[in-house]
Length: 472
Image (cartoon, rainbow, N blue to C red):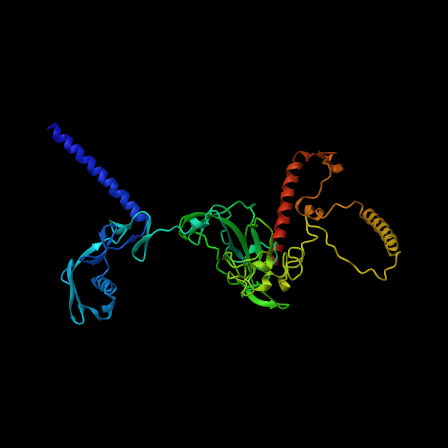
């Protein structure tokens, strides 16, 4: 009896271990791509692979392989060797025959195996799982060669579209449409390799602002990110990084047109242009419009600076270019007013020079003083002094005539909501026929004064509301 209980306990342990093994295998198969089972054929005497007979996807391919082997073995008779028949008798048996000049030359048996896993794979639930060191490709398990290993530790410059703006100004961070999320930290997937993003202070960061608008009159802003290849493979759009360096080019919400020969996006009364604030880049933007994606190793866009990173052709969008996108503005090679210190260059809707505003430097405006007398300043100051003295005297005379000083603009308002002042209360004497009687009403004056004050304020408020109603 004790032996039977021990056997039952051991059987339970075995069941649990098998269940855990199946669960792990199921999780592994779910995490990796499965390959379908195949029906394969071989022939008697086929060459071995790793000690096992070589199989082919169909019986016809197995027969053809034997024919080519015979032609190699007998090169003088290669043109006379043919396949007489290649027949499948069942799912696992078959036969073939080759002829030489029309006569039987060789016969071999065929062996088939159905619903089996292809080479370098193991059967799991739902299909076959490639063995360690192999990966699925075209329904087969091929050796897994990590393409990222040779470039591990190397820096790759990737250009990301930040957004599209109404001006080429490097100080304009109000985007039209959505702002693209930038990989300022963490990692992202590029070319099948996981790229780690360095700190913003690392070399290689660069910000760009196109000086040439796209078809919607908007200017592309982008950012170069110097990421380091980790040597690890990844899949774009996976949990590693659901980011894309290419952003959708928004349509102008207002009207696209030319003002002073410059294409731009202008708001209308019916369709005003609304914007979305974007973050300031880690480095100041300069003129240019590189192609979104990995920096080219050679050719256009593989250089440095405005001209070196901007292709000669393009439409001002994610594809980069044109050459005019890197000319003018800060860093540009064709001169022009540096952006951020002058007008935005978008016609009537351009942004004014920020000088003179609170917190901004004073505007430096030169005035042509030719023909102005040297004594003009002294004459002006003398006349201004006399005018101020005359104004002061006039104000004093007006105050005396009114019998009081200036009470400010609130005095008329106060008179509407406060009762007029009342003289100090005194008992009132009656005429002589009342034998000198007096009436002392001072005890109720305060209550009467409060009541009259309320009536006075209510009347003023009623008149005010009436005027507002008539105005509406």
